[in-house]
Amino acid sequence: MTNQTHEWWKKSVVYQIYPKSFNDTNGDGIGDIPGIIEKLDYLKELGIDVIWLSPVYDSPQEDNGYDIRNYRQVDDLFGSMEDLEQLLDEVHQRGMKLVMDLVVNHTSDEHPWFVESSKSTDNPYRDYYIWKDGKENGDPPTNWNSVFGGPAWQYDEQTGQYYLHIFAKKQPDLNWENPQLRKEVYDMMKFWLDKGMDGFRMDVINFISKDPSYPEGLDGDGSPYFMNGPRIHEFLQEMNNEVLSHYDVMTVGEMPGASPEDARQYTDPENEELNMIFTFEHMDLDSEGDKWNLKPLNLIELKENFEKWQTKLHGTGWNSLYWNNHDQPRIVSRFGNDESYREKSAKMLAICLHMMQGTPYIYQGEELGMTNARFENLEDYQDIELLNMYEEKKAEGWSHEELMEAIYVKGRDNARTPMQWNSQEHAGFTSGTPWLQVNPAYPEINAEAALQDKNSIFYFYQRLIQLRKEKDIITDGNFELLMREDPVVFAYKRTNGNETLVVLCNFSDQQAGVAEELIQTIQAGSVVVSNDQEQKNRGVLEPYEGVVYSV
Ligand code: NOJ
Image 1 (cartoon, rainbow, N blue to C red):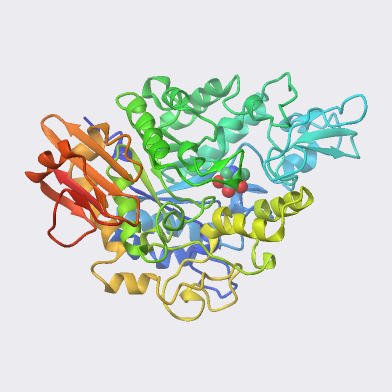
Image 2: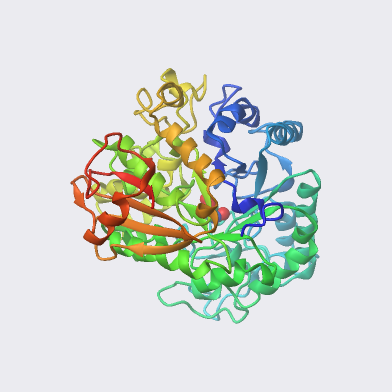
């Protein structure tokens, strides 16, 4: 049974806002906090419970705010502290909650701690970051590559040492071995929670504990030595004990490379660490090696992956459920069909995810079925990861066409094109020039049109969110995968006491048959929700049909 007062996040649906691309009110082409306030009624109408706000802190914006210069200040780009306080207040007035992004694996190199730290080897802040001597031949301390390309170590002329940056050069990693640093982070967290914030999404939080022996990585891959590192559980328990346990908040840790076993440890309430984590396993199935080496999705792998997470965390930890965020391409273009079956497949994907156990996350525009953008020129893109990748892979011999194709399929800017509010210029996102072009699909795909159409994807999400509130089985029931070997149908059963739901999703543009033994079960059932309006033969799923039966 869900403990609804303390564990409100188990019944919640979260909506992620990427502020830069959400809604611009001052015409500078960049979304802002007043723009979010303006759209709160829209979010209330959708029915979500919690907003996760990607970083709005003061930042040089090398990585769109995931490089923080001042943790206690709002970036002028987005507004003021007063604006943020007003946002929090208005969110609360509408019965919703607001969760901040906590980026504490690294800061910006313009953070005063780093500015001090770089001054000399005996500066009091030196040990806030990870500084090491190079190898005898002057090479970096290890062969690790950074996530955004190039080596993960940057040489500093002034002090003759290297600092570690798992991401960009301008994102130096903090040294969590230092208790003083940890205390500063905890104080900063309290600063926000004391203002009334309702929790944190924690950026790459399983990277904060590094293997102190700094071994060489296989082919430059240092991740085994910084993902889920030796002191990670200790640090998270300390954070929980010092900060989180004193507030009624929710936490979700972004954790690339975490297995379901890791996730159990991180999210088992007995361990007092986090409420849930973001896994990457289901997002890695359509690539090989790095994410740019594309391969077609094998649906059976996707099904078995969800099965693993659903069953292994059931009764112990808690899952997050997501298809999209600011780092992932648009799901309807990825696992659905953004041409002939855009609405149908977007709804099917929503059913497939929202009927599982966990806390669902909706990324801005997902509720409209927003699609990937194919911009013609590389210059039309902005993302540091994508631009660095282009240079690096070009040098390795990839052709321009191959690179653009990879960008169309996987680039992070697919998620970051401005929110499509209406069919006016720049999709109603700004009266100025948007920082990143609007997806040319906006005249058709936009919020105004969706709100006027009772069959829209928007209202479908609204219905799924309501269902989660109405039916405890969605939150509490167990999960059983059905039709395991079927290459196009994702089918599963949820059971809670004597209640059962059967979920059937066709991931193809062809009709698909339902397994014989299931047909009998669903014949007698009633339809809970479906993206197919007609009364029909229950033994056959139409292209991209998604349907839930109560049996
Ligand atoms: C994960 C964030 O989601 C991503 O956008 C960012 O670039 C990296 N962490 C570094 O902070």
